[in-house]
Amino acid sequence: MTPFVDIAFLILSFFIMATKFKPPEPVEITTPGSVLSQKLPENNAVMISIDSANRVYFTVLSDRDPSKYDAIIQGINTSQNLGLSNEEMANFRKTFLVGVPFGNLKQLLATDFKDQANLSQPGIPVTDTLNNQLVWWIQESKKAFAGEKLNYLIKGDGLSKYPTFFAVVQALKKNEEFKYNLVTSLDDVPPGTELYKAEQSKN
Amino acid sequence: MASIDTGAEQGGKKGPGVKKAKKLSTRVDMTPMVDLGFLLITFFVFTATMSSPTTLDLNMPKDIKKQEEQTEVKESSVLTIMLGKGDQVYYYEGKLVVDATGNNFKQTTFKGIRDIIVNKKKEVMDRYYQRPDPACEAKAKAEGKPISNCADKDFVVIIKPSDDATYRNTVDILDEMTINQVRTYAMVKIADVEFELIKKTEESNGIK
Image 1 (cartoon, rainbow over the protein chains, first blue to last red):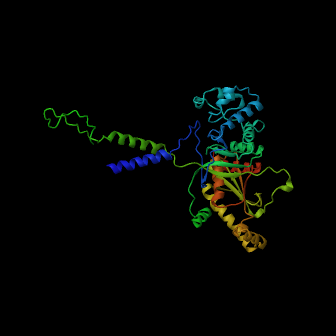
Image 2: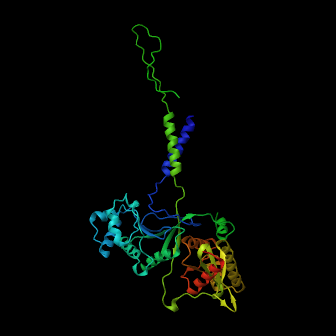
Image 3: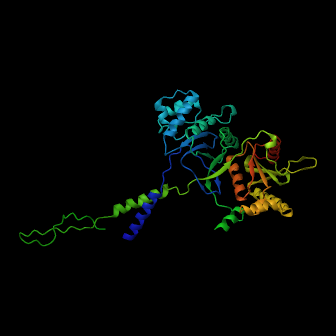
């Protein structure tokens, strides 16, 4: 039995090492599949999520340098005259995603981050071209990450409608950003196609 | 397995006045530990997320207002794909013609669109091979690129998702570009005429 137990513990240690806990996701998003196997950047990125009800959320991914969070929320606070307190702005670091119009931001940030999941967030207004609030978020992120490479991740639910995605792209375009990463899950390359042949010849 | 020797039993012979050192067993009962180990294995196996998300790059062009700066493409090598409601795909080759002289507005599904892209690409490439462009081939050779890059350089796919198309449709069609190695494609806002046509087709086909 000893070898058996040995192996079992070996497997155990493997899984402990290999497991990376996902941060709790307040909104569930099922991403569509694509054949591309490029890895997702996890730092220096802003993620724009679109859920199945076409609500848009904004997330900053900057584990390495948390001061970016402060810079973004301070920029938003001054440009929009929100009058956020220092505690509320500090709470932005822990806020996993923002999906409220500017008017409700104070209420969201006044809520403890653990309770934010229970708050129903209506999404950032984007489809109205005159009041595309995502433009501001991206603008402030750009300022905060000035001089560094910033990736734009768009994580859309497969069932969300195209106009919302288009509005998100418009918001990015207004900020002179033309390169984005769409978050997808991995699909197999269909055999017989040109890409399949190209990959076969590479191997 | 053996349990920890508590030394409770007073075995052995004991001579008068002789205190014999107690022999403690070094074996420890491992069963609970192994149980726990397996419990943890099961837990980690279930929680492990092996498939990490991947990304699809998307480059959007700058909005160009001036007519003369816009890229011109050959009409004969353009394929326009429109995405409609209920995972339906509509397409036409070249310019849209819907009048007495003909109708090139066609409907298909995501399964069918691959063949259409492949055939159109082949058609464009065949046309090139009949009239090759030596200047382009020389350039490709100098840069170490395959000559086929020249053959399909004219082939352009224009993607026009309608307001009813889902994000999945959009990603799927972009994926189709990668799968079929279409090098030039653009995502453009749908024209009103085309949207009307899609609406009409949807109505006649009963797609909601």
